[in-house]
Length: 380
Ligand SMILES: [Ca+2]
Ligand SMILES: [Ca+2]
Image (tube, rainbow, N blue to C red; front, side, top):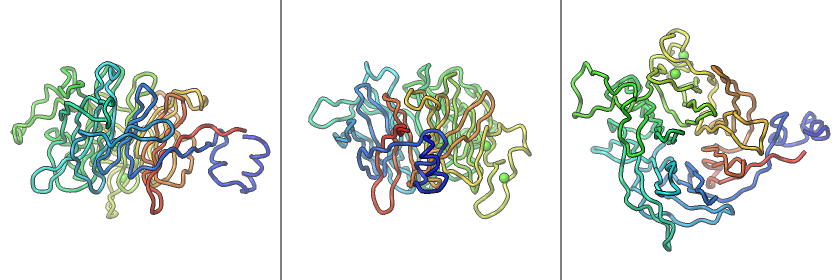
């Protein structure tokens, strides 16, 4: 920051955004408007796939021009926190064209649950399309309600598909090995269960419900609403989840670990009843950092680029209620918020582009649609 700008900031003569940090504030470029955008993924040719919660998928070019909506996207059950969710490319997308989508589907009697489908993206026709769409995973059981689907997607460096599965606001399923709610899920790319998952040999003491066994899918349990997952340079998986009243968590995901919800949380119940804190039950894996008041994380990424060189290895959380991007320094066994950048809008997602810029989805703005922004370091 220049001395001149520092003085203006110190005297509060500049908008807070320009003074958000002693390091690098942003230049913002508005790329396009979207209706409740939820997720963004870059194609190898530099275009993007953008999802809108109501069920539309678009192919978007660098200047904001869009093709679509893409045909063949599954019907989604839109409402509350649910609809079309995340989008991810298969690690071999350049060869197989496979695109993965998470979304909410209806069940019997107004129940709902998240699902993950994949299909081959065809951008050769007049209108882009997904072909050969197949569902490869479903939340189990489907329950009433419209919240806490989680359903972020991530492929790791070994080609495994990770799905963050929320507790559907039902609390106890997060500790129930007969449900895949409130869990981190690890699968092969076709949805089958890797033989080295921690609970493949789990023996239930209770009879199976509906003859469905989901233990094998589970990598970790005791999560509430995990809305962001990201890999660091060492291949470690970090996860960010919304706490109840207080207690948003950033967790380092360990094989077979239990993250405690709803037995413990550093937040409390919304009705004011206390929920024991993590330090009362050391057998549960504690968060590496946590927030009260909450930031309401919508997504998580770890920066690897050159544009914001000082940030390499730091995590960035998209903040919904906090209307901010939160920068978190990750340590070997710790994490710490080091900066918070006010954005003036609920931030649903932050993604690093191939150019090293931050591509940001606003969830919504006052009485208007969400936007796609591109952030670069400001001069000076
Ligand atoms: Ca926890
Ligand atoms: Ca508590």
